[in-house]
Length: 379
Image 1 (cartoon, helix red, strand yellow):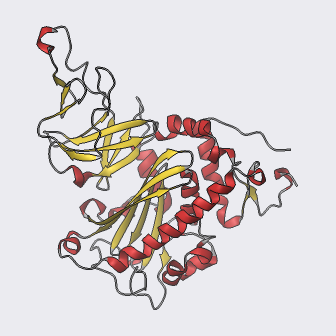
Image 2: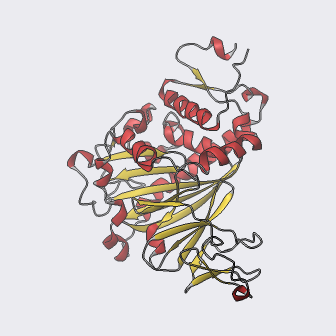
Image 3: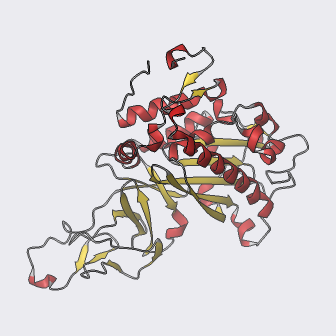
């Protein structure tokens, strides 16, 4: 049977090479990860001037910092002199400037070249022109987003648009006050799988009854195989005897005051392409950021966000965190096992999507349009 002969209930997937070919991943780095808005860090981690974080965005290391005027700045993490990596630490704080450890070229928090050995003897050097190369920055939902493209796409259409497209409007996410929440726990996962497999897994729930026993106890409708993301505006309802979004269904923590009555006792999942997942429940928000490292490796940083008084009080958030930590580990284990099959001759022409997964086909089409690659129809 060829993919042309599939029954109407099935549609074909991308072929395995999309998950195993470094050349495909290189196109994704250039045309997706470096061309779109990419979420890099929690804004509160850059609380004061000189606090910084370095992150990998596609092929580039990006330095994100808080400037003296209070704004967030982002630069390519590369010295303009001989191309050395400027900051080698993942995070930290400088007092006034960033200094390259190779030849001591020094840059202000605004990226301007402020000092270098013998610089005064070179009066023809424009300190702004030879400053760090800046990238576009936005803050939203309490996170910093960057775009490496010279002419970035519309943040409102791409990022805000993905949220509005999932929830039916953008006002609904505002009820959770995500920018005012505090990080109660952060877990970093190193997943031996292609980033697209993680996106595809997050978008569907056909697997939920098989590998997520704790989740389907809390959200019984997920056992039927249809993810909340399949329907615009739909939130999966807690089970009748479930008190909170916890590993055992026990009572949760303080409800976020702005959550609307119709959002109470419901779970909403949102995919913001290319690398963010947002999970909304009445008392906390779970925020995933993916950092694709290679065609077969993705680092996922996951924040559990609560009302500041919950975090400051030292209350036990363990049962709350454990539920989605288990879900994450179950999902990532499945993605790693799927990655192993992507190189099989069985998957050379791809697999199939059942009706509850058909929206993944839209993701595949979107990806192919972005990287401008059209696969030949198998014969």
